Image 1: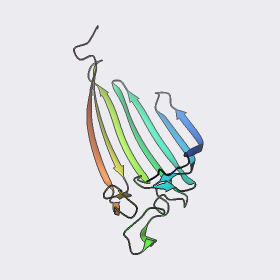
Image 2: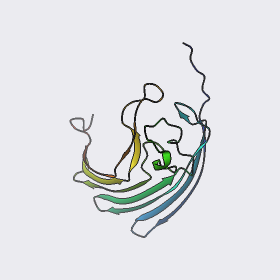
Image 3: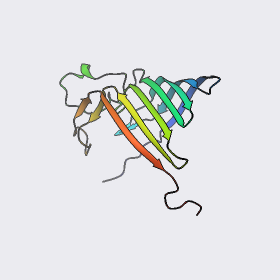
Image 4: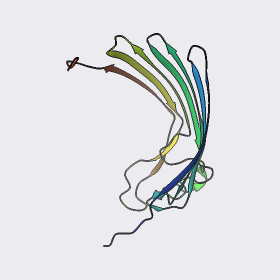
Length: 170
């Protein structure tokens, strides 16, 4: 059994970012992107794939922290990584040609950081991801595994950032 040689992936991107900052340091940024990957590696090299989209972020600082809202969207510009993958569907028409495996094409998020002390902050976040395609089990060999659409999901996260625990001044 020999090893198959694969070409290295090569990526290039074009991005444009526009921003605004208000008098109280709130800011809005818009990032537009077009990323192309040559020799995309999914089981074997697949040619060129594209990812085009935008990200819009609003950030608002306040006395003891900051809050932010964000939305992002992308599409695969008819170069979907799903097209080349083995699947168990009788009809390929249900596969979305504008998405890549595992990535949700739409995402909303809200997060904040609130400083309780100089060394501790509370950091809740809420994210919503649109439906996405995944393999339901690892791929061991070609045509093994099942391509599956996952429904949209909402995620809630709560983190505590505590610095200098037992180390202050060390």
